[in-house]
Length: 384
Image (cartoon, rainbow, N blue to C red):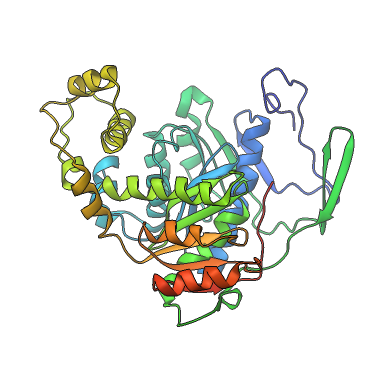
């Protein structure tokens, strides 16, 4: 398959070819993918396929730059998400709900995403996608009429890929870097509740499901990575940080933003007719962050039909303290207790990590102090 270009436009003559048996894991139905599009499609499909198998529910992911901005399984679409996308939350079908919940984790980053879903695309999801800034989708199939509907998106440049749900990757995988070929065994460990070895206490079923989704997310997120989850959806994903605690803090800030988007002062922001959805999202987030430049303050005032209320520091703290039942998963061992201390600030009550740090006893003690249930997986999930 000829690719539009490599990782960057100046890297021409890019191609994708199947290895070993010659069987393709995905099939191009429409569009011209780039190198990064292919990486997003392959990583996205693996994530939702694993999550769907582990949890037995439709799964979806919103990918940007080879890491998920959000991921979720089917579930309730709350009022904030429903209002943003103009749907009746209680009427949304399973597959569409999974994608809406995945995209709502970080809707600013999901702008221009690559979507992945674990079930065949239905008419409802296809219709939703036509109204979103999304570059492509990978799915194991498409209901009649959906491909034709999606082909018209982006003036005919929307990418449509079909995954082979029965594809089994070779046992050995290779990568060529600067004249060297690196090979390793494919990671074939299946994700299941048996991986969650609880140190103290017992995990409720909801936490088990959230942590399993978190492990699927981490397996296909650039390391170092951590993930906050609640009710079958990600609230904040931290990817590609050299310091794990930086990753924990950055993802935690995304959790706070997700939760504060549900604060009455944010929901009360009234935008003028014609202000685009993505602009409303971006202004809500900047209002939450609060450090507006003079130019931003002026443009926000122009975008609003009525003056914005005040979201004080005290109101922020009180609202954030209401968030609970959050799960937290880490792709590598937590090296210090500071990760636990920071995670606790964002409503975390359950943690899954591989264990094996020389300070694992300090991590355990921090969990006991914060009344967090700790599960050790013994499974590192680095992805590079």
